[in-house]
Length: 185
Image 1: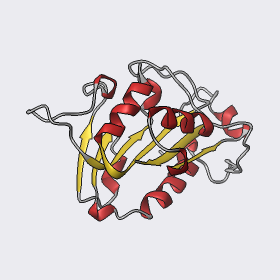
Image 2 (image 1 turned 60 degrees about the horizontal axis):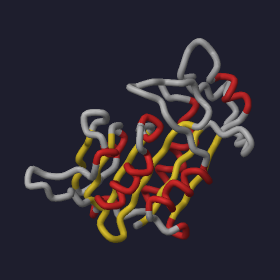
Image 3 (image 1 turned 45 degrees about the horizontal axis):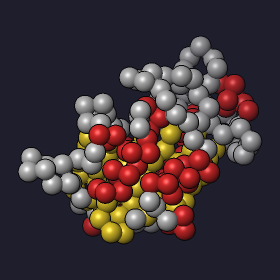
């Protein structure tokens, strides 16, 4: 099943990521597993909540901070108790010139897994990233949604499966469903 809520986000994000030299990059993903689809030089996955990025950057057995060229976080930041601290910790994990890509919902049902804490628009994500230490000129952020898709999020079956015959992907900036950003250190 492909979620209606993620179609445009996935298409745009794929284009952004494919502009990068992925085969030369060491990647980390916080939860999710979408990063495996890309040809990174190396890929490491940190599953939330077992690894809580709010508590600090990921360290090896000697206490050294893991360093990466890119950190991916798909649909996890809304579950974090301390998203600002987590974003600062990601910044510490990035090599100079490294990237942080994150995507999250804006208008969907509450989904406590284990908790549900925050929502951001594209501007809100930009603000979060700037407050954590990323330079605003090094941030790309977008959002997508429309009223018809928002109504589908209120149906009994959730998340709504994308139906190309039924679902309009036209963006209505006043009704965002999801937001995503790519920031460079």
